[in-house]
Image 1 (cartoon, rainbow, N blue to C red):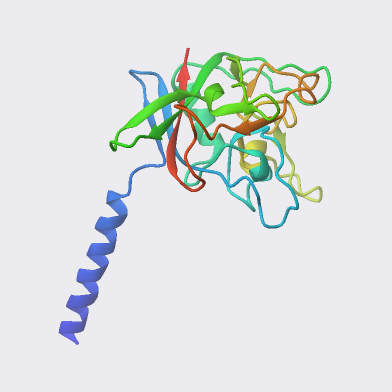
Image 2: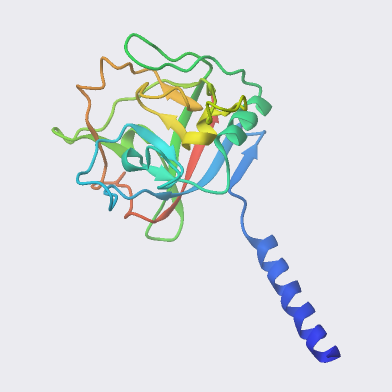
Length: 224
């Protein structure tokens, strides 16, 4: 029995050490004013859907938790959108106001977005998020956009209960290109007027190509 207890304690210690060695899902660098989030390249076709939808958001929870996981560039776990909201506030920013629907425009302090992509030599390269997206028809990259720290609206998940939650935590949407939702932390300056005209796909060719689905990458949010 004493031998068995010793083995159990040893195994437990090993598991604890492994858990401690796991890299954090989010790193806040106050000196560089950046937030770096561990992600994976999202699948472009979900098995429960019959088509591939244009990209409308940048980062969400994976399916099925992420309500917009079928139209995102990357997925993330281990961190909530409200954690990113708090991190942006810790870097000195105050949220503006998210936009939703026709005629609405996002407001708030500007940030820049980029992906750290793996390279053939084992290092990484930082690519502005706009260069990771191309127009479906022309193949041209998305022009530079303004990205605003809007913060999310609050949401009442159960109409029978008064409890409110941070909306982006409920939907899993961290960053949106178009104001298709106000349950988000960061939005671009684009409005719903541009949404029918700009149909985006992940860039799969050239020097800024996004790697294959499931590849680990990092999303970098930088305070301007």
